[in-house]
Length: 187
Image (cartoon, rainbow, N blue to C red; front, side):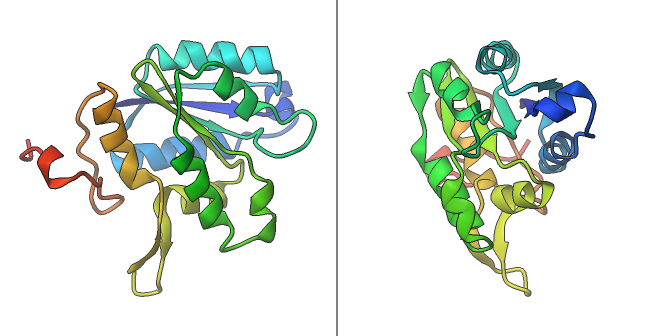
C-alpha cells in the first residue's frame, strides 16, 4: 500500500524551522508496512493544501497530513481536507481526540478530520511527533496491554473497503483489524 505525507506549516515551508513531524509520520508508516511514495511540505494556505491533497490522493491509497489542525487563524488543514472529500469519516477524528485527551485537556481544541477521496483515505494528524505516535498506535499499559485503541489498526480495512489494496501490516508494530470474513490467508 502506498502512502503520502503532507506537512502543513508556514515556518517549515519557508525553511525557518526543520520538519520534525513529516519524518515522524513517514517513519511510523514505513515501520507498519506502508511504502511512503511521496512527501511534500506546503504553507498554511487552503488552496495550496487542497491542490496537494488532490495530487497526493491520485497517487497513494493513504494520505496523511500533519499540522494546521488547531484553532489559530491560519490553521486551515481540516477545511482544505473537507473541501476535497467525497465522504467524511468522523470516527477517526473522534478517536484521535480521545487519545490526546489522556494527555492534555486542550485536545478538545484539535480539529483533525479524516475523509475519503475516490479510493484514497486522507487523515489529518497532530503536528507533534509524540502526539502522532500516540494517535497512530494508541495507549498501552506498562505491560504492553492496549488501553485505548489507536487509529492505525483500522486504516488497512478502511482502505480495503474503498477499493484499495489488501495490506498486511507488521504485527509487532500494529496488527490490522478486520472482521473474520475479511481476513485473507497470509502471502
